[in-house]
Length: 246
Image (cartoon, rainbow, N blue to C red; front, side):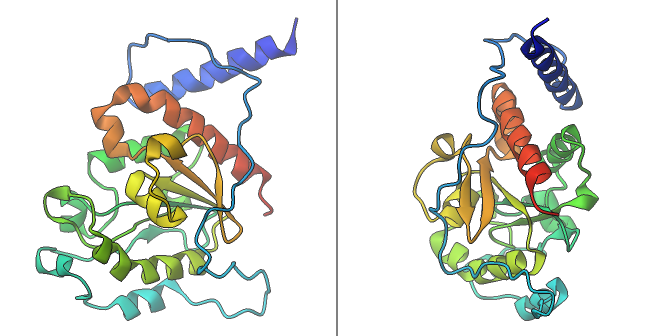
């Protein structure tokens, strides 16, 4: 029998397991998965030029996340400090191969001081598990470290104030792959005004690191029909990780 048949069946089974993990019990398929579709487009170098490429030298000085957190301090560099409860710096494996970057903390994150712990965070955990990853294996942070009031999008000056610390986090971790969660994250990392609908499904490069934009988990909670597109994005991320130099 044609090998593509078995590949398609395997892909469908993995997709159904992914949906089951997300709590989807009913599904109407609009079409079929194309087994010949490229899993990852060639990177397009549209990323920031001011982030130095991660050094591969074993003797290069590597600033630690604890040093970056100390430098951030009790940050009052933008107006968000007036309404926040806590600074949500980020958490996870300091040597993570995958780094996920959202836009900003929500209510639960502001209370607990941890990224992605509300309903969107629980969904993100299940999405990671669908590609055989646990939260402890990755590093998760946001573009801004303080909650914007009413969970609005961060303002440009707020993003500008936090960006230096984000770039330092990336440099410290040196991930093999970055997943940009949502429009604000993708626009900041890629220095573009394009919406996430135009960016997802493609790969980009920021100083030698592949960047895969996809929908924010909070958006999926409001638009569950987009979960299949995120599944396609996560498959590309998994393949990029598998092919990355260890």
